[in-house]
Image (cartoon, rainbow, N blue to C red; front, side, top):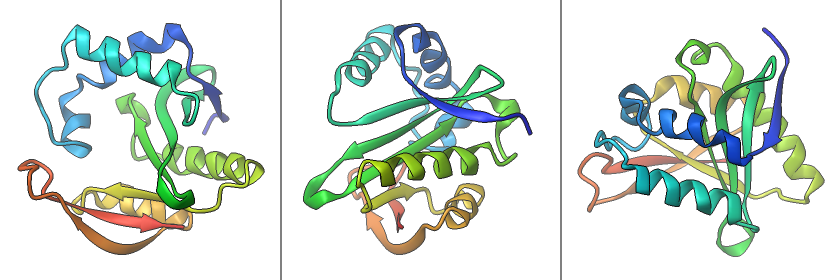
Length: 158
């Protein structure tokens, strides 16, 4: 496996994000919302990523190629939520996500961030196994009664 790295998101990454946010297979694994994102929605979400000063957003690269996105967002009571997307299909299910999370956790330790959680679809067994390999453990099921496509998630914490 080629070396992977994390780098800050830059303006030129918008084209990758737009493609990933419109990938039906990827959406099925994450939010479950299969409606195509409009250009305005992509612009707004990407602008928030670039301008947010509290959260940490990274592009995952392999051999210099952008393959995904990883974030660490500040939440309440000292908690931070992480989310990861391996956007490039050829890199999914091959350990790139686990390696990227481990790199993120190293950065989090340097920033004195220790309370980290994530939420994952209960049927995304591949992601759950990857998170467990990185030290996350299931702590509870979170219900989202207003979300018909994603009525519940599994909360996992370090």
